[in-house]
Each structure stands twice: as structure tokens, then as C-alpha cells.
Image 1: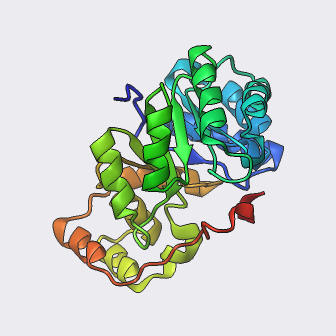
Image 2: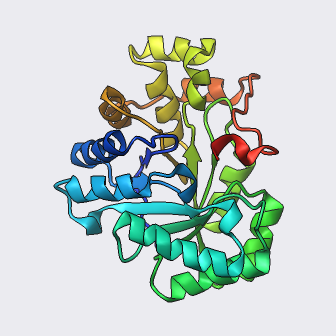
Length: 267
């Protein structure tokens, strides 16, 4: 069982590789009320994220900081070495959550997960996470790991609701952390979601996030800059009713944004 306490909303930082913009976005988000920041070796912004955390007038111990080991760095020795390099870039002694980013490239279940266990035992990460795994790969990883799986991160939004993985997360007591919770913008023009937004006199983005907040064990981490940082935070005030949730559940439009067979999208 996981003892990780994730806030209902996190800040995603994928593709935000401008140092100053990223650092200021993280600072603004934390001072707005966010307490979960997600980055990755693959994003090439760990230094900026660390700088934003230092700039914010928020105690470090209040913030859940997550990063991910690049698929090319998942061999046993590389995972251990590059995780320490991530900590150096972040300027932190430990991260709250360390993920295996994709089970591809250099991923080796025995070697990679042994490295994750050793990093956890050494206190360099408080919790171990996985990202973009299938149920079968989750089963395999859970059987190998000594540390509990605290979180599993995947694409998740109303048009791609990941029902099986959400149920898996509830059954096995870990969080499902949803990246691209707005469908990388694809969901914002969806007619059903737009209709529900009109009903509540709000934005389609807020509807997407409110849908996520209504799901058990699901934590969305929208990437945002500028005014969207506060708008996403304020979406926590929106509560969809049963009719809204039923209509989304029964919707026949299902659209994945990230191709699971082409992880190169984020390199």
C-alpha cells in the first residue's frame, strides 16, 4: 500500500524547456496553491523546475516533486547514475516520486526495477512510480519491486478515460496520474464537453479537469503557463453532476493523443 499523499491537481512541465518561463511558471503555480510538480529527464527542464521551487515562498516539505528516468537511461547502472544527476539538476537531496518513464528502449524489468529499489532504499526517492505501462507490465513490475508502486502515470482525459487502468489503480492502491488531461487541446473543441461547459458557464478545460477530479484515484497534471496556471487551479471549484458524468462515460468518441508505439514524441 502507498503512503504517498498526492494533491488533487499537479503541474505538468512537459515541453516547457525555456529556463526562465519554466522557473517562473513553477514559482507561480506553487504560490497559487499547487503542491505537486512533475518533470522528467526527457523534458530537459529539471534545473528550471528546481529553480522555480527555490524561488517560491513555499516550504520544500509541502511540495511533492516528481521526475522520471529517461527510457535510454533505464539500464541498472545508468538508472542509478542519472537519477542522482536529476537530483543535482533539481538541487534536491531527494525526490518524492521517481518514475520509470516508458518501459521501452533500455528498460529491463530485473535491472531497472532493482535500481529503483536501491534508489528508494538509499533515500534518494521517497516513492517509486511507473509510467505508460500496460496491466501485464504493471503486474510484472509489482512482482519484482520491493517498494510499492505509488503511482502510475499515463495519458488520461475524458476522451481517453483509461477505465481499465483507473480500476487497476483503485484495486492495487496507487494513484493514476493523468498527463495531457486536456487531450493536448484536442478535447477543448469537443462538442459534448463544450455543451457541458456551457451548461456550467465555464471552460471546456475546466470540465476536463473536473471530470478527472470526480474519478477515484486519478490526479491530473496539466501543463500550463501564464493565466492557465490559475485557471486550472480554480477548476477544482467546479463539480460536475451525475448526468454530466454519465454522458461522458457513455460517449462514443474516444481519441488517444499519444501513440504508445511511438514514444519518440517527447524526445
